[in-house]
View 1: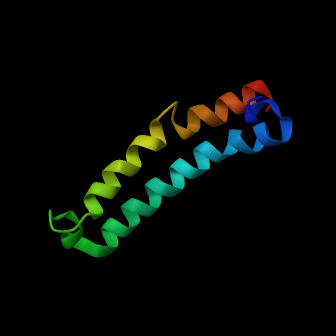
View 2: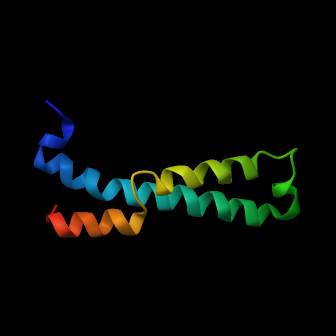
Length: 75
């Protein structure tokens, strides 16, 4: 039985994707800016992590699209 078939789990999962994507994206770019120019160099992996944080944020819809879908379906 899929985990999303349980209402209590489904409601939490519906809000988790947008929240997790936004948190990862915001954190990665904040850390990159705090480190300044060194964060953008090849010697530092921060720019790599910031680029990787962009993919989950927009996968399967942007946070705004996910929130709109949740509201439209009444989850």
